[in-house]
Image 1: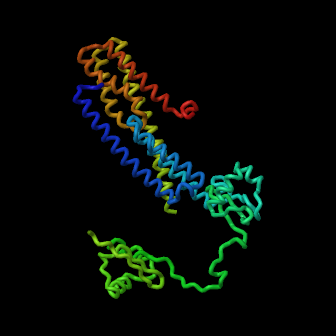
Image 2: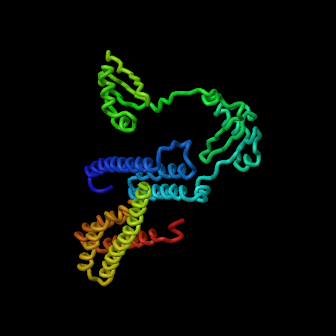
Image 3: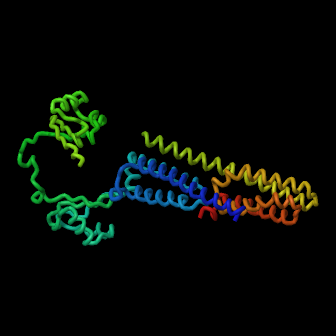
Length: 240
Length: 126
């Protein structure tokens, strides 16, 4: 509408540039927000976290598409949502009452093989919902369950009756050597120093292991070392 | 603790931005509104040369303050003012003071509408 046709063309280019810049800023802000919130997945989120996640996606996307809306109308709500989420989680750590209000409580649905129908009614859970959740835990008979608890994130935790629990090493009185957690020492031909620091072996030990086994690091795809010094090496495939 | 600091910093930035921009926004709009009102009074007092000067001052003030205003309100709300301001130089050049007067009225009304629509009130919040 303004000026000559030439000017309108220039305006169009700026419009796309504005969208590009806004998208980059909002992407960085949303990544920061999610990083600050933590690493939980949607299925593991507490109700408050789920609400924040939905709000963030809504708040961030509107000024990305609508150039007429100021970016600050999205940035300020994002900042406030991050602050509220962090303050809420900090208060939850200190106050049981607050935690109970914001996150809710875990509730027992099955006791000693019997459904707690009053709880189910309160939670608006159908028998089908409970049976489906049990099947997902490889339990096909309610009578096998000692306790089934509906957690605050909506996931059902199941404790089987003793006679249905799988046998574990301590039942058999077996002595098992603790191998610990195998650490990645070499990944895609590169030594991972951060994992060596976490590990009980030093970088010198790694060099010794490499020399002793005559390993060419550049030809190694993956090399792990466990607590007992046992090495596992996956060589790189030869390029055709 | 680290997250507590991040939360506090972000909350302080947000609050500062909200209060500072609200204060500056109101002051800027009132200044532009006052200039447009002065221009209208000069036209009504048949002082056309001074009216033209005040209209030029209105352009200057708008250009000076518009960046802050556009950071806060949707651009739809400022587009009418922007278009009216852009027409002023041509109207002064052609000495078309009747239309210039109409444009100043339009700017004043839009400015006072912006002030009233951004006040903290039950109507605006809900």
